[in-house]
Amino acid sequence: MAKADVLLGLQWGDEGKGKIVDVLAPRYEIVARFQGGPNAGHTLEFDGIKHVLHQIPSGIFRPKAKNVIGNGVVLDPVVFKKEIEALKRYNLNLKENLYLSKKATLIVPTHRLLDQAYESAKGEARIGSTLRGIGPAYQDKIGRLGLRVGDILLDDFGERFRRLTAQHVAILERYPITYNWPQLEEEFLEAVAFLRQFNLTETEYLINNELKNGKRILAEGAQGALLDIDFGSYPYVTSSNTITAGACTGLGISPRYIGEVYGVFKAYCTRVGGGPFPTELADETGEQLRRQGNEFGSTTGRPRRCGWLDLPALKYSVMINGVTQLYMMKADVLSPFEELKVCTHYRLNDGSETDIMPFNLAYEQITPVFRKLKGWHTPLNNLKNGDALPAELENYINFIEEQLGLPIVLVSTGPDRLQTFYRHAYAL
Image 1 (spheres, rainbow, N blue to C red):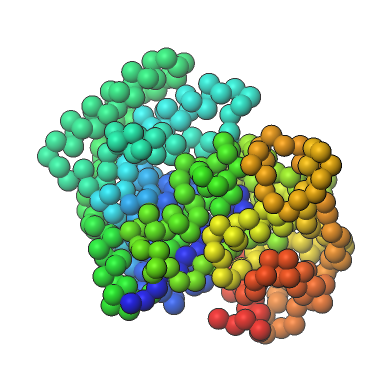
Image 2 (cartoon, rainbow, N blue to C red):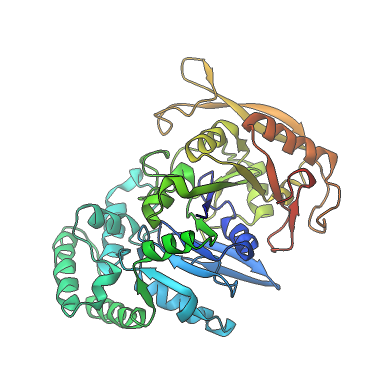
């Protein structure tokens, strides 16, 4: 029986997973999303065109790959319809190579309204939600109230939808939220009718049968490991399991059929929204990183907070995910810097130092302990696979590998799929 490989982000999201899925997709017969929803924005760039996907797997531009939206995803039919319509000009065979789990939970319009209401009520304590209805949808799933994709095939779906949204409306009456319900309802039901045209199936059987037939599967994570609902920087996290284990529960794959775990990380760190960020640079250096890396959310457009690479956080992610290979993104963004810093330890309130992620990361006053390294101070954009990397970049890579005990197999030197450097020692 074949194995399912998992690709996920090791930081706070936005690591560049979409590009890597696109690069790896030709080696796989199936690319599957296992969690998250339209709060994720996976950016791919090739042939001079930038593509941003929110719910559809990043293998969709590879014609031979089947793409699966798994049961662990929360799906917004309205966003799905808009994504499909935006992809029409590429003549993709979407009705044949895109499969949706009947067990995936639906995001209804009132989930988005509840998200807005809950977030605004928190005031200064708000966590920076994308307001896409993700949290309320997962909340209904866990509360056994939610609607699932397979429910849209039932004769009484309209009644079920109105019963659920009536419960939401009763809650919304407590908040100063205004909305045009007839318009939202019409838009949603039109999107549901559109959704019925696609392959709605028991994707857990599809995936396991493909594994039995020796087909290779790439499970694509959304957000990042440090946003995991159990292991992330709670409460500033997303509402699903973003780690490797989430691929098992979000697709119906036994843990014994997990193969390689590809860990994607930036050569520095970014974070969108609230929450702890030990190495954040709230100065001109941070602003330079933002400008150089074009660090603005692909889903929301919000500016990302930027900082130096955080090794204690990265070690933690490697551990809980069982990472086997590392992929380093955006090395080109660090090219202008003559000196780089890498956080190797945290200094805690009591003056002690640790390389362990503390339980109360959101509240502990952490001071990062940095190691200085020389920058390569040379452009990487035109680097071709097989060329020698600058010595300072090799030193930077070697230092990270020594600290993490894993090989950095790939270095991304730009947004295009061709700007991908495979290191000779670990060529895939």
